[in-house]
Length: 239
Image 1 (cartoon, helix red, strand yellow):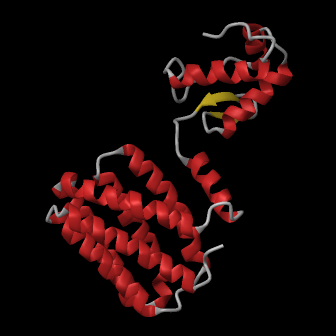
Image 2 (image 1 turned 90 degrees about the vertical axis):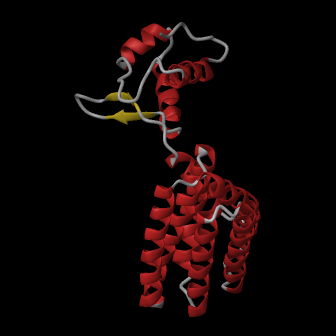
Image 3 (image 1 turned 180 degrees about the vertical axis):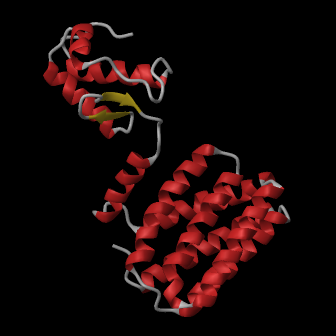
């Protein structure tokens, strides 16, 4: 599976070979890499570069390094956690502003919602209506339920992305919404009507989706995103 590393770029070659074996399916989730001493022999390298390469692959979310007698490097199922955490760090360090996220969301979520209007199944619509019932309950509970309402709002946006039938959209928007949630959590609701307005936006979007009104749902979603950004601006939420 592995071959002697290029002596000119040992570290990069180690990463490329192991990553390649994972991505092309020769190594699958749950598979354990050979012991480090065996990998050293296979690659004809030393332990130092190998350990560094394994650490990088762990940071990428491709491996889990387990300790102890039954330890070793185990292949992980690819996930979005490392990428989401990277976006979260960029937001927390103010490398990405809410204005930039809003511009991205307005364009992308409008298009995704329009696509969902064409592809959503009856089961998708039932799920969205069920989430709306949860959101309505939180609206009725008032300001104290703001964070719970936002969590349901997040799930609705992700469910719409999923119903569009494109995993790239679903992945990216799940990542974005998980990180936008941080702003909701750090800026308590001060304007109760905003909660009701947000809920009504979601109801109108789901209604348009159910009626397969792609143009209308695109406009509604874009307006919903703009409303969020205006509110966060009024709370001083933009860096």
